[in-house]
Image (cartoon, rainbow, N blue to C red; front, side, top):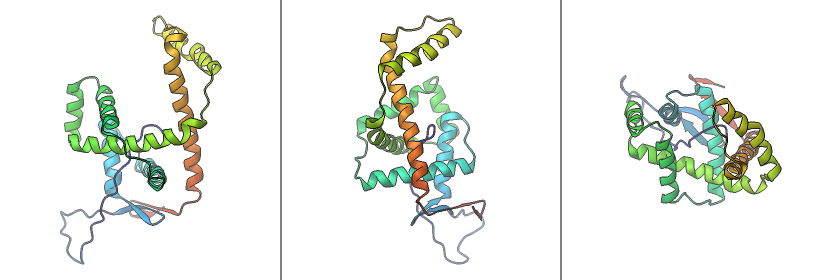
Length: 215
């Protein structure tokens, strides 16, 4: 999938009778139809809020909606294949990585407060993200070959020059090879997933609705 992304849970559509809604009430609305399912404004807002929590900014509504549709494709295939939900230890590792991505515990707590996210909200998001990531890894990792030549080439063209630019001593190839190998595997998984998602979209019936207009 593109970049870092997280799966937004499908919210319930609120059905109100004529005249039942007061001006201060907000009725969830459909932002896309994918096959026989719908994606809602609340799904879009949930993903936007998570992006702002992680990066202090978010992508445009159009890009966010594309990500939600991609997540729908992955989740639908994973569930059809009865792919297992992540274990508690998997989710905990994902949560720990999320916390470490911030400069400090204080920054993590401040950002969480700023965007109104609870620990339960974050666990839900990390669980969904881990489920999708695990499925893509399982599906595409076996078809991503990375040989020692590719690892050495990356080391020489990226690791050494970057260390020199920072005035640092670069790690040896032996020290860096496991990290480089996994980085190249992840890059290959992302590339294959992108191609698969584009091909899958071509066979789906999708209608999107943004700002009240069909697109």
